[in-house]
Length: 389
Ligand SMILES: [Zn+2]
Image 1 (cartoon, rainbow, N blue to C red):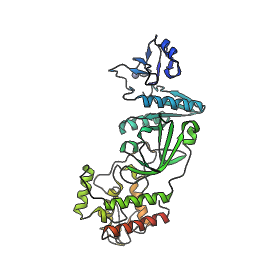
Image 2 (cartoon, rainbow, N blue to C red):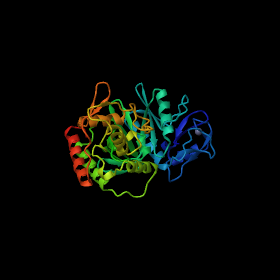
Image 3 (cartoon, helix red, strand yellow):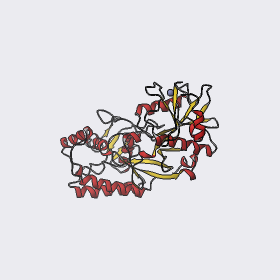
Image 4 (cartoon, helix red, strand yellow):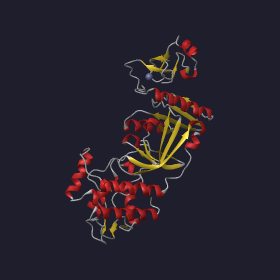
């Protein structure tokens, strides 16, 4: 941690002092504002000057595993906000919720808690901290360490289920977005309008901002989505890859149950109907490849229905609903409803007034991979022309 208090309760941020001044400060003890334990002053050459709890500390805001990268970034963000004229506090302790945000920003009557997250924490912890701030009327703002950003194309990132937890929404930006800050390059990255392509590959608008030429409000200003032609090209490429893929070793239990599901229906990815695996907003809320849950809806729920006969769909057409991710989102849209909407737009389904559906045609089933790829192209072009990408 960068800040600690003296016996009389005065906070000292070591990074503000020269080496000589720090040497002077060493003469007195410092304490953690959260647990009141005495802390150790550390001012070596590798890391930004900081304080550390003694080994075996039982402090509940004990900053375990937060290294030099995190501490430096926290200080840089503090300075960046201060220079913009904000009232900002570093690691201020909030006794009512026993939490200590990295930065606490006060803008008029509004308070914003900034968490700069570089190491892994559990989804429960993310939720717990977020709920804590909300209970105090504080807006949480999560910034991921730039070391977690894995760019694979102009507007495409590889996201693990951990990073997907950090999609957040703001009043002026309803589209889910991720923020990153790299303390080595002094750059921010913003990733928004996410469209899950595979379980990890995610299309989205990716923008970079240098710390010196950007402000908090410029980073959090409304912005455009990815051009639809980009989504079209990326999706078509992925579909081709999916059709041609030779199944290798079974990767995990999800992969195993998927293959078993295909086998029992005498299906193969190369000839799956083209209406399966379509871009749908909020698909990242499921920690499951898009084609898997879409295949189950089409093959198990819709195809057995007779054309022109009304039918109801269960809320979750699975034995077990997939986990809804993203603990920070204000709204929890249902990706399945979005998918059914797309199927209606494309003329396969019709939604009736009473909430039931009606199948309008039988699913075109490709005979081989070549035919499947032609159908993929046709479906994606339809989505592009109907502004559904
Ligand atoms: Zn402590």
